[in-house]
Image (cartoon, rainbow, N blue to C red; front, side, top):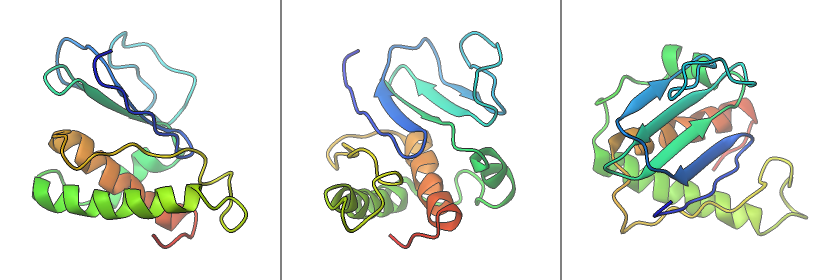
Length: 141
């Protein structure tokens, strides 16, 4: 693993990887093996050239992504990056205040860096996850 970012937002993980091509898996199918995973609602994006992947296993996110979220390429990458920086900084602030914010919702700090180009897919999924997160858990970031 060359670059490593750990995120745990009720099942959201971003971690560095070495995959052979860009892949998208949904509805619990593993993009690498094609087998069903333990989680019933999994979205996975992996890209070798970016060396990052995002795996979201929160129940309902896949449905949100296919029915509520704006289509890919609706937003520009710079828009998504700016929004993600805002959401991540607020989320991380809440992680550091476990007595004020529910530590079961805000479990782990997100290491999202403004100087790293995560690519469109990672930014798109992260942005939409934050929208889903706010709706599903009645949080306002």
